Figure: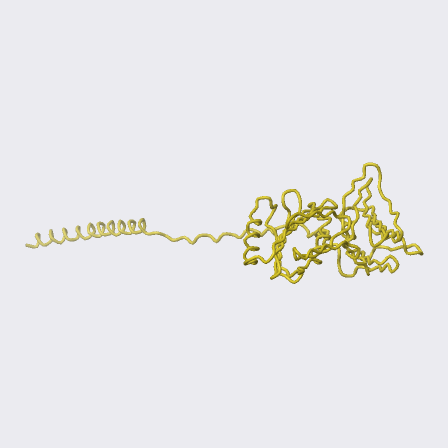
Length: 323
């Protein structure tokens, strides 16, 4: 009996270490499997900011002045009392004049403009091969002359008076200074002819050197390289609607270089629509004017430079309906 108990105890003692070994193996296996399936989150390294590189912009440069921007507040003003004109010029330019006031010169920055006044006419400027084009200044007729690097404008004012404005300068500067030349006390249309037709119910003034021809209900004027055609109709029905329809049709013509400008204005006691812009190779204005007394359609054609259009403005300003 004691021997059997002893044997059982030995078996038990043998099994205990075996059981512990098996348990240890199981625990180690479980631990390894758990570690293999687990995900270790490693914080991503923060991106190191790159050094900022500032955009290197070119140093600001002064924008070139356009021709119309050259004129500015603060310009000097010269008043030619004998020659009856006013000239504005840059403040850093120097003005000199002859004692009799018939020649004035302004100069600065390598540019020179001279204005000669001829009370009895006789202004001459030109050379062989000179380019001459008709021009209007302040409503007065003349011509622009380009000759051997110089340019000039000869203006025929009232009676026999002439003005010679010439410069050794760029055309841009010359044109800007020319736009700042203004006559004082002179009326460009004072010596103009007057057209008056009570049957057509129309009256206006026009330059004496223009040629006028008449047809039934139609007038044509030509001169200085420009032309004006005027058509009249007495007592039209629904004149404003007719004007809008005509203007819409003309506006849709393919010859316009860009969208023409439309202006509404009162002229000569009536209402007017004026369409203007560059058309084909020149400049054109179409005017439709109406009142209870009549209906007028006028077409003005000038060069693209619009050298004579100031005269047309004067014609238009003088136009009125008559009975």
